Image 1 (cartoon, one colour):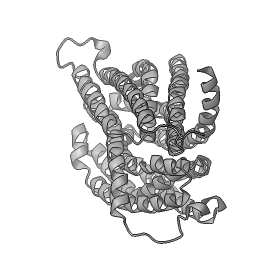
Image 2 (image 1 turned 120 degrees about the vertical axis):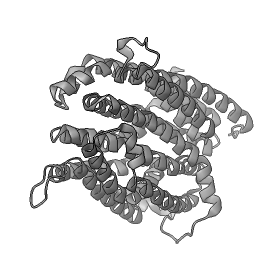
Image 3 (image 1 turned 30 degrees about the vertical axis):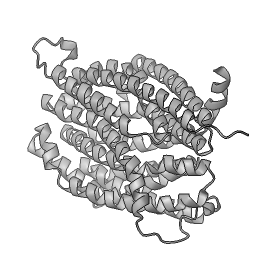
Length: 459
């Protein structure tokens, strides 16, 4: 096993390194939004928490659908069927356009979703404005996600990483200008973050399109070689894999989004404390996510190259490595919780609300690593239907349902430690443990069945 780890881990790190940097750059958007709005007003921070929960739920669900391009193109890349990848990209753009229109309709009319939080009219109005602004960037963002999936599939994540870093460098001054005002612009508060994000999304897309058009490496894929109308068969193939992935993303993210909306019923301070810790948790999640995306790429390429045993071995190597790293991260988060909290510089009352939640964010790192790695391994095999149901039962049923019971003390005998926001976080941790166990079992059986049905090519 050690020899396999020594063979697989350098490949994983080589792919995951740029992915991690890029993911952190994107997540830094949210970190900067939270930190800068926290200095503007508590109402704007609460509105940002509500609005970002709704937006992320919709955005991640939709991008999950187009992310089906990654394992499809990855298998084509492993099989050296390069010209077919360009057609998949073109069909991915058509799919992204249709999904964008659907998402815009929801973001432009978010009242029903926001009403769950029972927030004050002032906070709700700011959240609605945020969502209506950010909707204008959705078509660019969705088209960009097609290019992200394409670059991941062909093992070129560094290109996207540089764009994401440059975007972050532009986002910080744009945020400051639009949130606090200046140079003829009135202060916008939280909604200013949305406008800055829209500008960056369109700049990203234009730059990425130009790079693919000009770069010599991309010529073998013939992305711009011809115009393609929507192909019913190819789009249905993308949807067959992408819809379960998108729904899995939606379930995973909404388990957190509805946590925020329910915690909002406890008051502005618990919600603000939750927003800071959830934001930090999102940053930490980028490590196992990046390793998982790299794993999915290598698994898909191995399958395309008719090497099912290698695909299985890469999967198990990644599970061991990713989980070990995340256990260490969890311990470090607990040890340095106070300095980490100081980075957000929240008011003292928000700080006190956030501190108890650090126990849970440190605790679930191992379960989060196991479940996300297993899920992405299965996507490399183009298996997404059963993982979707596993997520629904564990994250919605155990996580959100259990959190509601604990958080609001519905039975009347819940220990104080597990009431309020702490109850939601504990239930979420347990739901991730259940999802991890079921997804690992499914991976084991899938790999065994795949080796039997697709025997490796004898060399």
